[in-house]
Image 1: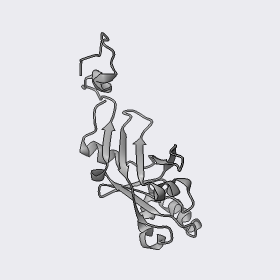
Image 2: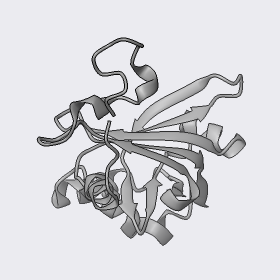
Image 3: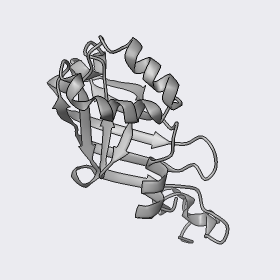
Amino acid sequence: MPALTQQERDDFLHTRGILCRIATIRPDGAPYVTPAWYLYRDGRIYITPRARSEWYADIQRDPRVSITIDEEAHPYRKVRLDGIIAIDYEPGADDVWRETYRAIAQRYVPAEGAEDYIQETIDQPRALLSIGLDEAKVSTWRMPVPGEEYAGIWHDRYYLEGTKLKGRQ
């Protein structure tokens, strides 16, 4: 599939309402994937787990993550990050970064509803995590748009020898 340009990637990551899915590593080595709200700002993805969430405990033990952000409608844009996520603030420092949390909530809920959500959950501490795109391995892709070669939908290694799309990239 064609990679997103940097502008396409940034525009996509700023699209309201799209969830990320963050994969962490459980104590037994098994993967754990959970959907989460996120904010893309200044080249970083910000995520806020609750203090007692299982995946936050995973990150405290092992900060390696894989994050996917994708959409269900054409052109099926996707961004994947693999890297080390930082704990910018431990739970209990929520007042320091509340405006970031407000910005995250407003990506998913209209402003008034976001503020109600914040006020109703204000006594439930959260951590603030982030990962920079320049610190992670980042992959992007989307379906071809009109005028682009359809053969580029997959990497050449996926096409079987002798099939019509093999070698057309």
